[in-house]
Image 1 (tube, rainbow, N blue to C red):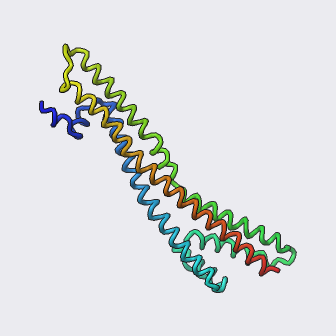
Image 2: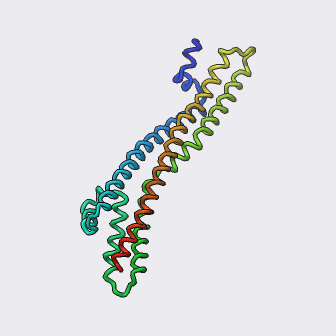
Image 3: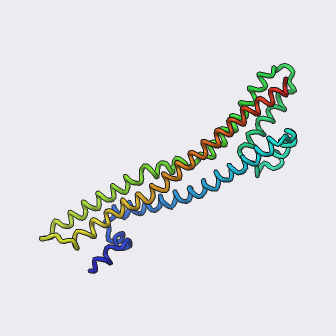
Amino acid sequence: MNLTQDLSIIDLFLQASFAVKLVMTLLLGVSVMSWYWIFRKWFAIGEARGRTEQFEKDFWSGGDLNNLYQSAINDRHSTGALERIFESGYREFTKLRGQKSLDPGTVVDGIRRAMRATYQRELDDLEAHLSFLASVGSVSPYVGLFGTVWGIMHAFRGLANVSSATLSSVAPGIAEALVATAIGLFAAIPAVIAYNRFAHDVDRLAVRFESFMEEFSNILQRQLR
């Protein structure tokens, strides 16, 4: 058999043992899923960042808070995370400010709790499936290494019945085993890079959300006084 043909990726996969084939198939499936979530999170976080910037621009332009609130209610399906945080806080503000028995500090505490609850939901949504990317990045190399070790063991067992081992008889078995590690790295590296990038972006958005909640709470507190 032609050694070059035997060492092609497809031939190496077809000639691999069942366990190595299973490992390669699993890693390829995980890689496809990780790329799917990489693109999904890329667009989702980019959209969240763009809507946050737009709402901050509208909010700090000096517009009326009632108009911003009505706009958030009317366009609820197209609002961003920060706008939903604003909506929950202002809704609580309108409910509590009419109660004469409540002092301003209690009203502001209620506003902050309402915004904090929405903030947690929005942050959970932004962080969804990031743990999957982290798991792919940390586990895939070891899964690929397991396939490599198993493939090498299988290759050496096959040499037990051979009187003299040559490069042509050893190379295919070793190569097909190493392909598992290569696929593991192929799955892990993009997942690690994407996770680190997305986690950084989510942290920056979280800081912007928290800063807005504090500033908005101070604005409402001044109105109550």
